[in-house]
Image 1: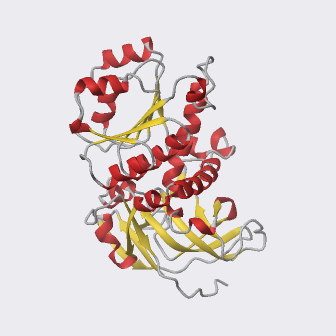
Image 2: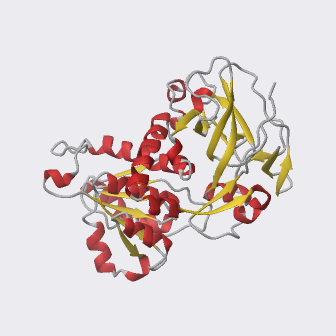
Length: 378
């Protein structure tokens, strides 16, 4: 079968032919890939900033944003069946018996760093024709989400961040974080930094939760992202089209900042404007860029005197995947055109390099696989 692989030793990206995986354990599921999303992580792996092949392999099959169709199940599988649509989780727990999060089923909080991530670290990914994995790592998707379900994995980032923010904001005991503050007298405000897929999906989560939401990005409107932003009831602000005074007024009244750019200079610029008891969630991972100047005294003073919280969030647990599937169904009912507009291209695997090397523009690009004859795996 075909697969897209990176070879860190020779710094090559190739479409290769590899042996199709077979079910070898009773709890395993064989999945035919339908769509695999391309994100910044994939592009960084293809520029050889990171990405670790499995032990004994000189290449890594990339891709972690998946949608597939079950074609075969092991004898102990009961939750999914052939024909079901599934999204497969990415991270697997580390082997340490002393890592409480991994042993409890939360490898996204792994304390050892010895986890594996399919398509990223120590395990082959999903940008290939067939995949085999345990049933426990499968999340069933309703058929009506077939065209957009590949957005589930990036949406889990916002789902986990929202849950973490709710738990943190429970420290404000005069408020009920589970009830939109419009019911309590003042509507909560949120700012999303960045208008890529993770930012737009975060905006969908925040708008649905009842927050007045702003998307703050560099490109001036109109553009595809600003059109989606306005369509879902949020407000789009361009970094170049808002004065310093207006920006300070805006952020000083913000309850939640959801950072989705990985641009540290922007994130720390915004931090200095934040108001009392606000929460700032970082989800981006900056590259190894030139250091920036930061007024650390001002930031520390604000964090202390204004009771602010800065939260980092990476990967997601199984509950976040279930929440993403549920919420994607809600988004697709309320704003079907906007949700579909996030996905801007479908490219066959033979041309995957063009997308991975940044030669294809758009918001979310997808590598698609044509229906294939399913050979027996036994």
